[in-house]
Image (cartoon, rainbow, N blue to C red):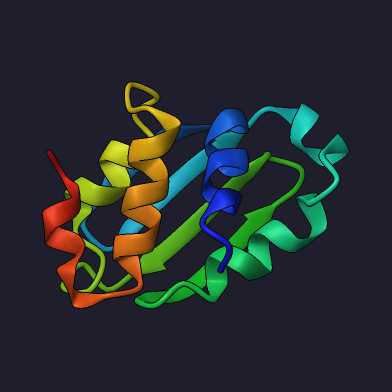
Length: 106
C-alpha cells in the first residue's frame, strides 16, 4: 500500500462507525473523480492486518474489517479524525506495516 493513499482516502471519508476490528467510512461522492479512486480499495485491502474490505457504491460506504492486535484502534481513529496533519498520517501509515504501530498515536 502506498501510504499516500490514506491521505487521499481521508480527504473524502468520514467515520460513520468504528469498533475495534471494524471501521465503516462514508465517502463524499467526489472521490469517484479522483484519479486513484479505482485503486484505493485494493490499496487498503493490501494493508497488513486488514481481513476484508466491502464497498457499497450506492450507500457510498466502505467497511474495513481488520485485526485490532495488528492495527490498533487508536491508529485508525487518529488517521480519520481529520485533526492530524498529513505528515502524522503518513507516519501512521508507515507504522502500520510494522509491529511498531502502537507508537504511532501521540
